[in-house]
Amino acid sequence: MTAGLGYDIERPWRELPQEDRDWLLFTEEQPVVEVHPKRDRVAKPYKGKFWSARQFVLHTLADSQSETQRNKVLQFVESGPCSLCGGTGLTRAALAVTFGGRTIAELNALPLSGVAELLRPTAELTDATAAMSRTSSGERTEVAVTIARDLLGRVEVLTGLGLGYLSLDRATPTLSPGEMQRLRIATQLRSGLFGVVYVLDEPSAGLHPADAEPLVQVLEDLRASGNSVFVVEHDMRIVRQADWIVDVGPGAGSAGGTVLYSGPVDGLADVEASVTRRFLQPRASGLEARPPRQRIGTLELRGVIQHNLRGLDVDVPLGVLTAVTGVSGSGKSSLVGGVLAEQAADHPLVSRVVEVDQKPIGRTPRSNLATYTGLFDAVRAAFAATDDAKARGWTAGRFSFNVVGGRCEVCQGEGSVSVELLFLPGSWAPCPECHGSRYNDETLEVRLDGATIADVLGMTVDSATPFLADLPAAARALDALQQVGLGYLRLGQPAPELSGGEAQRIKLATELQRARAGHTLYLLDEPTTGLHPADVERLTEQLSRLTDAGNTVVVVEHAMSVVAAADHVIDMGPGGGDAGGRVVAAGTPAEVAASTESRTAPYLRAELEG
Image (tube, rainbow, N blue to C red; front, side, top):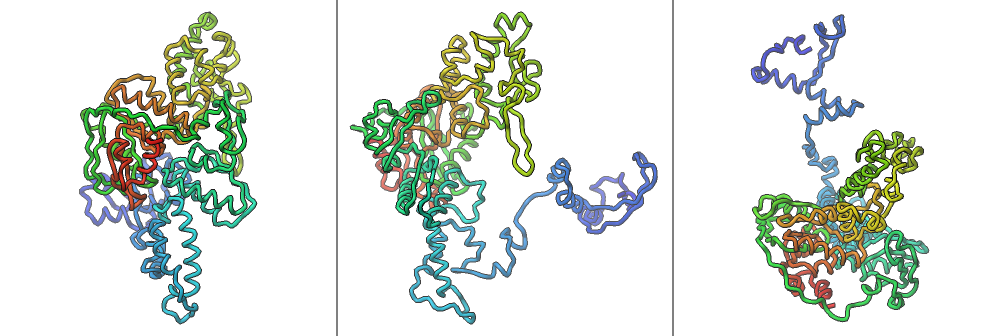
């Protein structure tokens, strides 16, 4: 078609005049050209419409139903702010209106704490005038005062919950689960409802102790308004404030499910079976002082710029356990997960960097606990070594649910089938053929000590430990899983059923069983999220074990028991968002606890002193 327009298609592109290149790339014209095919399947000449490169790309993105075609043209475009509105999405007329000297776009970009300060002067006016059409500005009218007061009340609920660092234009997908839950709580607090039962699942998860205090006040306000508040919680500071406590246990999984106590908080002290009771009561004395480990080197970060980190200088000791603390939005995750993860790999004393994050270990039921940790390889080998399997000529591959032969072909070894629903999201249902076992009937005829391969996958970590004790590789993995408090999980538990905290601890257990000594930097972001204090103790022991092997562990953490057990503490702050991004205090836990600027110091001091 280009040849039909008179262009020499054999001529190199770089030799074409700029005018011709611009026309081929950007013209809005669409001339119709008669095409005489030479190698085409179409035998006769036909009329074709010419599209410039730009027109073709935009047309494909706007109208094509082919995902392949859309992805192909996406490589030729890039997103950027609109040159006319500057990315605000508003017309010039809308941006000409200001309040407090700021346009709606500028106000939308402010943190909530900044919005509160902008609204306060108008909300506190005592000499407001009536709203008149001839008034040049409406900022000092009664209408403006009423609106400003209502908005200020809404914003102050959010800032009181420690969300003052969030801007109004913050995209919802970028919010953490803890931030989302606090936003929902704030919405309910302003609703004015009473007689409502509120059920909250660990609202303090991911919160600094300083941010948890106003949360308690919000819960008190909900109760004072005539509502009932049920909270699933592991933060003992919040549990102590409750009017009634229900303790379930004594263990997890099959070892739990029993209500050990239901009554006033003080009464739990008399329940010997309760694991919670010793954490609910203050310790009689402070923590036993432990000499900090000696660092083997220092990772120096200079002039760090990322998010709210601006020109930050910080030293991270190597060969020790370091806790990074600070209120929400102070820059902890930016420092550890962003900057440290990138720059540490170049240090001569760091052989590898491992981020133990809360991302899923897999996205389909095919991924599970046994496959991720590697223990399933030992289990399959054990089944292949049985006399029955040898007689049938089966190898370990026969017992893999990822390979044709032993698996159920209806679900292809997933144990579940995807059910597509009209107008609704699809869901997973147990396979109608194997009923979730993943294997065909013939494979399930082979048994190891009376159990089929499906039976083993159905065992919990705790029940599988004695059963697989004679398989060293499996036993090592199971021991590591128990040490991080995951004894209640099933070996075949599908990855989509695992929480972020469970996924993170599975990754940590996988690292623990490798028993690799020295020179690895482990980065963990709030690994205690969702953990009972007893499990936090166990996790802290494993972090110490990793460090004692000659590795470096850096953990972003709000649990003061973990911070107190660290060798070095880096406290970020003093606030969140623009009010954070700098190191407020650094040193041993005792040194940071003595800081007068740190918001972490009072809580760390209380943990150290008991």
